[in-house]
Amino acid sequence: MALAQYKYMDIIHRCFRCGYCKFPQDWADVDNCPAYARHRLESYSNGGRLWLIRAWVTGEIQWSPHLADIVYSCVACKNCEEKCPLSFSDEIINMVVAARNEMVELGLLPPPVKDYLKNVQLHGNPYGLGAKKRGDWTGDLSVEPYDGQQYCYFTGSEGAYDTRAQQAARSVAQVLQSAGVSFGVLGNEETDDGNEVDLLGEDGLFELLAEKNIATFNRRGIKKIITLSPHSFNAIKNKYPQQGADVAVYHYTQILADLIRQGRLRAPQADGACITFHDPCFLGRWNNEYKAPRKVLKAVTGARFAEMERSGKSALCCGGGAGNYYTDLLGASPDSPARIRVRQARATGADILAVACPNCLTMLEDAVKVEGLESEIAVRDISELFGP
Image (cartoon, rainbow, N blue to C red):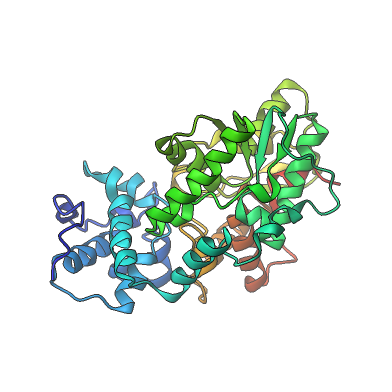
């Protein structure tokens, strides 16, 4: 039976499966779509995925667990939108999310996706950990609760709960403190930003999360926010205003670049190091911020900066977007996007792979371990380059 409510029925048939959505910007190879790079099957490319979605919503094929896995294998990296030459390119991710909306309504979800959404609904984070533990990331670091400071530092669920991301969250806080930035944190009053919840198709839950965070912002008088995660940055900047938010939001690399420019923050030193940078999709392709992290990295004293062949708008996603850092629908293979990406990083000769996203941090550090490259390349959050 056709799904009459699917909102993109009038344009989804216009995908001609030309294949551009699989390419990097320089057309060097056909694997810049993370799901296609992992599986090398046309059904996992975005062109193939759209045709399958169309067949499902028109009733030509029936739902199956395999179809759901294909629909949810998209990590919303926007490479397809960047490469698509057709007029509806800006709607490609929306067409996939709309199919997920239908699967959520029908309860037809891959088990890891169902677990992710259930944990966020019950606990306010995908890890299923107690909401009262959200402020524990600070450890023995002295960070003030928000009480009228210039900025609210929003750590997001990854920075609050993931062990490796907690280190990055503390590192950013320490760098901000060293530069004399006035900021406070919400601790247990913060809840999941909802960026991945929205992309997984649970728009009702996203609205609840956004409303809760916005109510906290309003109650506490918060006007400026610094985020650890580009995913939080994207949600608060682009999605929260639709729910009535009125705040200015900055990714922490934008703040660090400005502090270095002002002379308030001394550039780090890494004599003899070679650094490459992995662009986070939700900072780059989603929000067109490519300069700030590079300004910080190029200010590092004594280091050489080596750009990966696939960088900027043509960067290969680590595979962690749209909740895949948790659901892991693209893992368990040498062709997982994270493993491909660390091999690309190592090919530059770099011994430091710098990142600016907690999801990328955990995905790529795990990939380095699996690839056996721990003695050759270290994954570091940009803020950690300022440490001892």
